[in-house]
Length: 113
Length: 113
Image 1: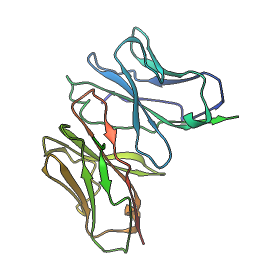
Image 2: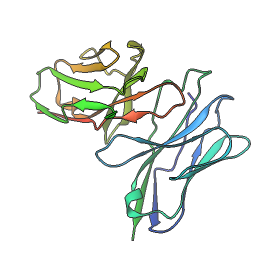
Image 3: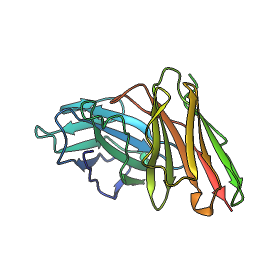
Image 4: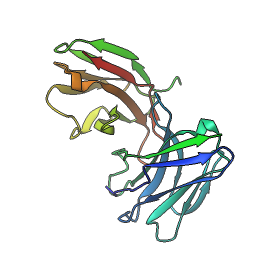
């Protein structure tokens, strides 16, 4: 499994853009990068997934540089309700690692007024 | 679909008792996962199934833990005998295949006294 490294925690004010970077230096050629969000007392929820360059949906954007050794989850104009733990996962069908959904420690984002 | 359904939501039991947690995955999902989450250890993958067959149970902490999936719509995680250190939130999740979105249940909060 490709090991991922994320900051333990981040703080932000409401209305700011938040960027959370995940390092995955040994990502395999066919691995995808997936981000999940977890609120207190709930199970994780899928946010976004990408393979290269940029992916955007109604919730977030995911930026992946050409070497794919890192990725950045971007949350535009965060609100208090975005306070949660964000997990970065890396895995692929070819290596079989995408089946084993393994979560790291995640990044605890605290948004305040 | 009602999503992944877990029962019970809360369970309080005495040390030494048998505990059975239940999960109904989303219809059509071929993969089912059991996780345990604590403050100290984070979100740990215990075991996962593909087409009702256990694929990787390396995360199961010890022989007191067992999991079954008798059919595509039902799985159980059993702890016998339970111990106070088993107190945690247990999540069940399912997805249709690697690199697809995983859906989590609401979790079962287990307290062993």
